[in-house]
Length: 109
Length: 114
Image 1 (cartoon, chains in turn yellow, cyan):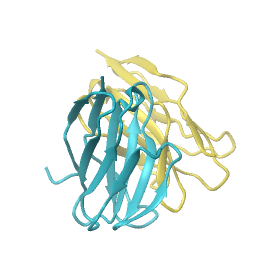
Image 2: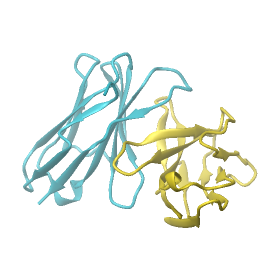
Image 3: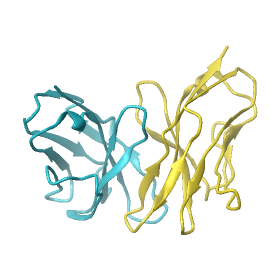
């Protein structure tokens, strides 16, 4: 069965510092991975997906199949990046998402 | 707001009562998902519809839970004989068909069973 692990429940960094949110997965097939973000009082929304290989709001994530990881990175954190971040894996014919338990990122001024 | 809409936003019910939640997906989306999220956890998949057909159900979906999408548009999730362990945020998401379609989430219904 598939599993997504986010080892850090809380992460605090200062504005302008680099940030890395860790995500590891286990899945027997070819994984399709996503990062979702939930800002305060807002709904869950897609931040980026590995197949797009794009940078959104300065964030990037690289799929490392050898380490089964999909860490989210940003070189210079901003206060508006403070949010809950969820790593997710899509699987099955229904393409349902398996989520990690989330990391609450706080960017301090 | 033309996104996924869920009602009610909050529901408090006594243990043993039945509750029903509604989800209105984005109009052209034929895929609809229900997830449950408990405190400190990420969302967990409950069930999936393609149009009006319920094609997948998680083992989390006990016999007390039933979901419908009668005309392939809105969906309802009913919980019978609620238990305190049912207290959670219930999320609905919808998407177009296609392997790379993005899932859009509603704001959820927070259920508290007292």
